[in-house]
Length: 434
Ligand code: URA
Image 1 (tube, rainbow, N blue to C red):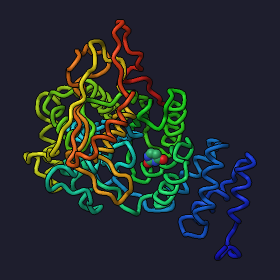
Image 2: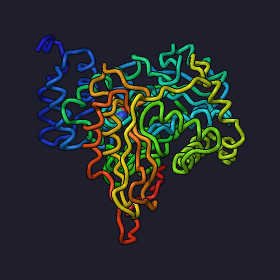
Image 3: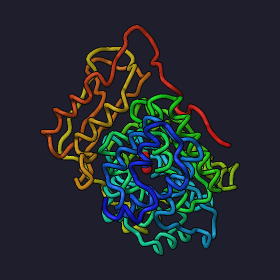
C-alpha cells in the first residue's frame, strides 16, 4: 500500500480486529478515518471494515470516537455571533416527508434561528433541496457569509451543506451506498451526528422514522438508533431529543418535489393534511423547548399568517419567487379502487419507489429530477372508499414511466370489506431524551 511504511497502523489490522469482534482503540479509529479521508486507506479496505461494523457493531465509546474523528476531518461552523439561539431538525428520511419546508419558517417566527443544511434525495426518499428547487429561481448553494446573514435577518435558511463539513462522511456515505452497509446503526448515527455537531447548532430534534418507507423497519431498531444519536449529541453539548414517528404510510397526501412544495404551502396557509400539521407543530414545539423558548402557541402561527410571511422571506432571500406557479407534470394516470371497503394499507415504500420511478428521484447522484413528477394520494388508510373511486394520481413528464411505477405499487395497498381497522402505529410513537 502506498505510503504504508510511514503510517501509524495497517488498515488490515483494524479490519481483522473488528472482524474478530474486538473493540477498536481510539487511536485505531482516529487513524483510519483520517487515513481514509487522505486516500491512504483504500475503498475496498474501508468497505470491508464497514461490513465488519455492520455485522459486529460498536460500543458507545467507539461510536463517539468515530463520530468525533469524522467531525475533525473538516471544518466546524460557528453560530455564536447570531442574535438568537439556534435549533435544527433532522429526519432520517421518508416518503412524503416535506416537514422541513413548513417547519423552518414556523420556528423562525419565535426568534429561534434554524440553520437547515439539507441534502438531495437518493433512492426512494426525497431530498429537501430537490423539493425547493422546483420553485422558480430558488438556489441551494449559499456561502457561509450569506447563510449567517440570512439566519440573522430572516431566522431560517435551508441550503446545501458545504463540502468542508465532515468530508470523511461524504466519502464514507457514498461507499456505504454501493456496498450494502447503509443500515448499520453505528454508521448511520455517526454520519448524521457528525454533520449536525460540525454544523454547530445549539439544539437538535431528531425525527427517527419507523416502517417500510424508512431505514429502520422496527420500533426497536429505531429506538436504538435514536438513543445512540441522542447520546452522541448530548455528549457533544448539543441539546438533543428524538421522536420516533410512523413511516409505514406516506406523510400527507403528496410524494414528489413540486407536489410537496404545494402541500407545504397549504400547511403554511393554515390548511393541509392533519398528519403533516400535527408533526410540524410537534417538532416545532420540541425545537423551541430545546432552544429554551418553549411554551408558545405554535399552531396559531400557521393559521394567522406569521409562518407564511417567514416562508416568503426565506424563499425570496435565496432568489425564489414565492408567488410563481409551480411546475406541473405533462401527464397523469389515475389508480382507482377495485371494490368498496376500507383502505387498510398504503405502503410508504411502494409509494416512494413509484414516485421515484416516475422521475421524482434519481438513480445516480448526477441524474436530474423532474420537478412535477410524483404521486398525489386521494385516500389514506382507515378511510372508506368506493369501487371506481380514484385512490391516487401518478404524475410524470415521461409517460413510458407509468408501467414501472404501477408495478412498484402492486400489492402496496389493500381494501378490506370486513370492517377491520388498519393495524397502524400512531403518528408519534415515542420520545427519547436524556
Ligand atoms: N442520513 C445520513 O446523513 N447518513 C446516513 O448514514 C443515513 C441517513
